[in-house]
Image 1 (cartoon, rainbow, N blue to C red):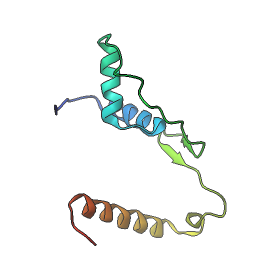
Image 2 (tube, rainbow, N blue to C red):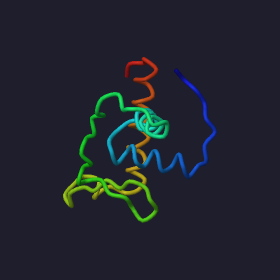
Image 3 (spheres, rainbow, N blue to C red):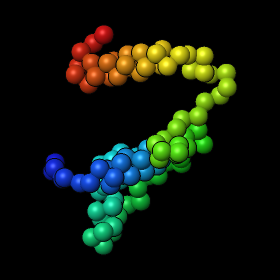
Image 4 (tube, rainbow, N blue to C red):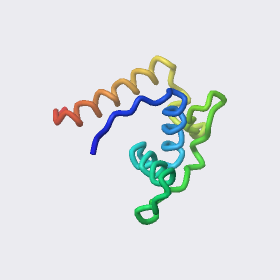
Length: 101
């Protein structure tokens, strides 16, 4: 069932950050938190994937993905990285919309 909640920004930020660190969806994480808060038994053990050693939390609380010193991204300018990110997001949006490239 879908529902809309108006939650404080800092709470949403923390939920999203935890979801990234636990490699889970926000939906699954929030459902687990609600079950815990209501004292309900979990629906079986949720599959918790180990956090990758390549992901850490940066000084501003955002996830940082580490890469090898020889990774192609280390040789790209900020403009090139942004262009690559935009291209990837456009491809994902088109795929979700059912439009082939």
